[in-house]
Length: 225
Length: 305
Image (tube, rainbow over all chains, first blue to last red; front, side, top):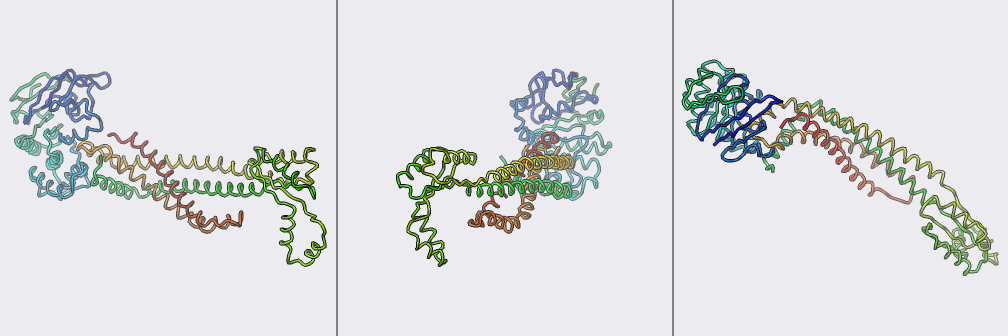
């Protein structure tokens, strides 16, 4: 599904990613681990076209996304959901409105939005909080709303960049459980994290990045550095 | 391409943005209105002055009085020679007989003049030519030519009222209006661009989070830019409406009076309505260009898509 071929990314003269070769298949759950600044976030940003590569190729379903026109990037992003450490919910909108917003900006009809959003909120276990504003929710709940928003386009791929970074253990576990559930439903998930405990519990494929290079790859791995 | 749902959502967001920064939006609208008022005043002054100029220009001509009793063929000789001059636009001929008849009918109510005329055995009035040129500058040369020895056997008198002084003054005023007016309009256009640029920049800043999320969830670039363009178009529309309202009394009350004063034979009421509509359209066009330029500048600089 996703193929990195000798991908290089530089920030000024420093290489953030140095010759990455990687293949991720449909339905996989991959944990991307490494210290801060190792290149995990850069790798995810390259997948959604937020950053451009300086060498190599990135193929998603055999389409070279490095050659996708800037004006076509929005359509690529609709196939890929993304969640972040800082959550990025709109504070003046309710949980329902935050998820609906993502559908609105992509031109979905009002009746479709009214039908779909409750289903997605139910999937993340927050239907009962649909009318709550972000400041009325816990960190874990907010992140689940963000995941619901990322799922609103029914993406084939979900990228999670340190989604548990600001959460306590219980909330973090809830978020990881949700990501696993989404993966079970068929969505490929790539989780970038440096939370060793969580990665060890997941027991799925683990890719370790150090200094912009993949150093360890394990099929049912643990967090190793 | 944008579908209708997205189009309406863009308009709605644009209106919301306008309302959220109401004071800033009003300031932007006001500066744009001042610019448009200057443009309109400039346009009107220019129109009035050039109309006066044209009217005065039309009154200038050279009157050529033939010697009394000059035979028809000699009269025609001068006429034909003048007709070959490329500087001359129009020659109208009034024969001695016609001049006499005109004079008679003009004074028919005055018994003293009528009686005196009846006592005359011969027509005392000469045949005349009225000569108009294309360019004002050519009048003195033509007058001089007619006064030359070449025509002295045929022509008694050449009368040329030199209005060039007034015309030159009007031309100077016209030039001043254009230079000063365009300068002033330019300065205000620049201020309008800067104010709108700042307002849109602030709106972008206020909606930073929203824009970032829109981008990440796959909103198209035009969907993200659209509300900012809508907002600035609203400034254009409102400022055009305000300027138009301010100028309605000028068009309905002042202009017809001024035009009547300049040229009493013309009724310009209909023209004035057409001119007003035309002016509004031009103003809206100017406002749109100014706001589009400033918004695109702000978008390019601050809206990272």
